[in-house]
View 1: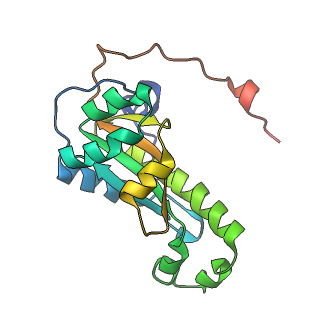
View 2: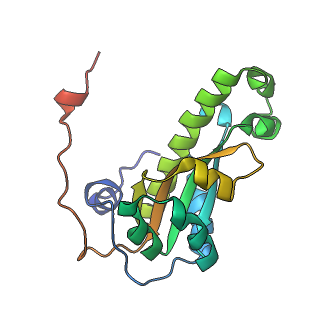
Amino acid sequence: MTELLSEASLDQLFRDARTFNAWLPKDVSDEQLHQLYELAKFGPTSANSSPMRVVFVKSKDAKAKLAPFLSEGNLAKTMEAPVTAIIATDHEFYEQLPKLFPHADARSWFVGNQPLIDTTAFRNATLQGAYVLMAARALGLDCGPMSGFDNAGVDAAFFSGTTIKSNFLISIGHGDASRNLFPRSPRLSFDEACTIA
């Protein structure tokens, strides 16, 4: 990991990447979703906990199941997107730790410690969701991450009877820059956001 990415790659991943609200009628294949996860899964999580779970909402039936729980402002753009990923968190992630972190008894760190479970699960699944977004961009796909939905409704519809809870959504596809693409909002400067101690 000693070589700097090209300027074009940095543009694609960061500087020119946007949150899309409209989509071209181009499919995202199941193979692309597999490729996306195969990249995103390598992002670091504490104790390799990997608590993220994803439902890639793609079929008509799955979209119809998701639609009632979207806010009014997110409904049309989410239904138009080829795929919307429900980025979710498994609050029993620690049951996988004997496999994922075999060199220590990491499962015992969590069992019965609900505050640690919840904090670790939420932090690391959120990180993993960001890795999904970056993996999608690296594969030439565009993203529309969002809140603005009824988490409890989505959990009942997609994760009933499990320890999995929804976190946020990412619509994925080929963005249509000619429709509903807002001008880039400002960002904080280094001096406004950072300190070197």
